[in-house]
Length: 598
Image 1: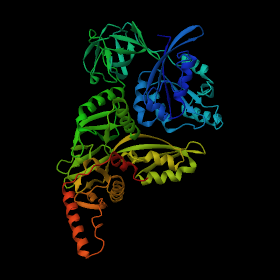
Image 2: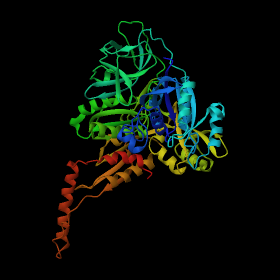
Image 3: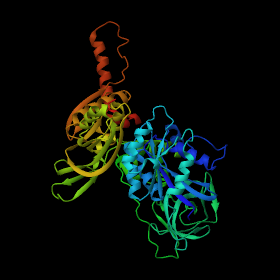
Image 4: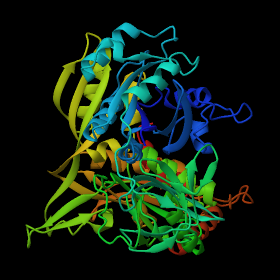
């Protein structure tokens, strides 16, 4: 056990985690020349296309230092705020963390939030100054900032470059000398933490775990404490580039387990694996519950695919434990699921993964956040409102509370004015403004979560020319004046387009939505009125004109009544069509609401 080191890599988005992980794998000889490629651990097409890490990836490396062989278990983590749950899971399985800071971009918001997460779990932090070879790097200034943030000495910070491999031997040396070996007792009863799992169509669920106490042997009987189910460990092994079966996985080590489980719901991330004959084994605590921030309905395009969508969701949840879903139905779209996501990027990624990995074409409704409604009759009792249709009648309502977040934005001092006006437009209240250096400012706002769900991140990048980093954490619920905005097409309300909106913005949003839908919905054989309504009051209207045949083409001359007669006949036909006609809504229309300001 003294020769095992478990560590993860934490950093802000695009600070070079995956590239540095590639260099560590090269230096330890874990990858052959033939297998080498950039972003080696990012094995999903989506990750490679977007250049971001979406999933944590565990890999084992063997390294000889001063004649002694060491086993290094590395977990590479995502940097985007929407995948912070992946980071918390990785941290729970480690004793140390490499904190990477880009020498050209300096300390960013997500760097700080991931650092606090690691410190809460008592991890040993090794600060690394990455990309020192860039012409735009300012290593001296960034080193001073890291010293101030961590309270460490300048000698503790390792200058490195993921591109050239500079500093990699020093990093490996620091991992061995600074990160403590795992604690635990190999003769105690088995206790192992599940930190990830994936679904293999041929072998069932593959579970990734970290052994806290005891040993897990192939062929042993094991038990999952949360579900109470018992299985036989068909195969255990270590997570090299390819899975490597072993006879057992010992205390402090990380490995995988295959039991032939076919039902995805039987494996829960954060559960504890034990031996059925040891009855007194307690579950491992300290694993945080996922808190979804954004809710949206996900429906199959073809209603017959509902069951396929359900099994796809189960398998996807196994690989992404931060996805929360429950069945629901809509008058416009049939049966589907109400899903909880950690943010808009998370929603986008889930939709892409459903289409790519499971071949499911889905319609996603307008995302919204979870509110709490209080009724006049019973003021103490709250009703959760995850969907605009759940909002009680306005005459019965006492008040509605919406979730607020504490937003931390780090930017250059030139853009403070632009960012402040953006946040105030989004109903933000500034609570703090700190100058980290003469050039860099940290702004703290209290803001409604609903305002940042849609286009806030994109607009923040635009007003700051890409120089602002953003991180947020929940600070509870506050009372708010909300109204339900309905969209009516051809006189029928479309529940999938309804939204809960602050009463001050309702008129502007209603007008913009009607204009946007008029552009997106194709013309039919009849006029389609698009209306935005609050209760029974129509606040905006647009009309999509009918496609018309020129019925008067054959009347060249003669009395005007001949033409009028033909037009009246056409008008009656169109009116009849409108009564029975149904309007097809394209997928872009549901997502267009998110891009109203473009």
